[in-house]
Image (cartoon, rainbow, N blue to C red; front, top):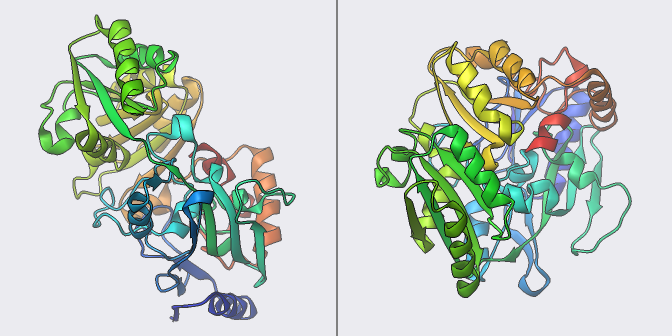
Length: 417
């Protein structure tokens, strides 16, 4: 077994070219914060990008940042915060959920997993903010796509094709992202005591209003006690985040209170407490319990999600909470993953996608971790995989069993992050 630890892009190219020549599959890792997502790896050799680090360009006035793929995300976010800026798509940190310390993710992993957070409703995901990449394909060929300016037209955008591919198409060596000014202030309005159906209705009203709510989530009974170190108590909490300039935030909060004042008791948390609350929602703190109980990430129509969860609870023991106005469900099973049951109910209640983000290795090896693709999309994915990595050198078997080449790239998952 060989571990390659490149410090420059040329070393990445050399390592992949060796793997192609030897037909020796490579596992691609940064700091390993998301290594336990997907099927257990089927590669003897490792390409470790943790030493390929450094911010190579940062122009705050131009809202552009470039960095080597192995650069820690925490390091970049501190640099941005020191300059009053942020990644508007709010990339989540999988570390706590997977039993690791927070802050281990890399900027390359942000793109590979197409990360997003609670602000996804307004800001999109990583694929909506990537400007350009330098990468090495599974053919052992270096290429680049996009550029270092916000307005850039260079034909087909391969940068976005890398989003959500989990390292199965190419190895990104350098990435360039758009950044934006951080909000001057933020406050979260909390409605207490709502059941899931009423919470869904309240979030819909808020998101459809002129209050410009940037995030909406619902923590059912007991879930609220697992954020902010238990300061909320156990009653359900429906969260509505408002960001911007101080007077604008105060005015919009007043609008929300007028619309939703009869829904239930109202509370507010502001500034650091609000940011900490949304970090806990973003990083799935209610289920970051150190166990390997199966956790699913489900994207489906917001109006139907709570109906699906209720139907599932009739047949299996589980806990759930909701982000993205109810369109993102985080679900923890108490026993086996129940993949067939869950995906059947998702289809029954309007369709969607389910990803098994945490489970014991035996379950990850036997259950389709990523949502199986429809035949037409699977065929397209197979053609894309054949163009970029015809010998299946990169992260073989991570997304599906390596013998199933028709769905070896996760275009569906990438599109729904």
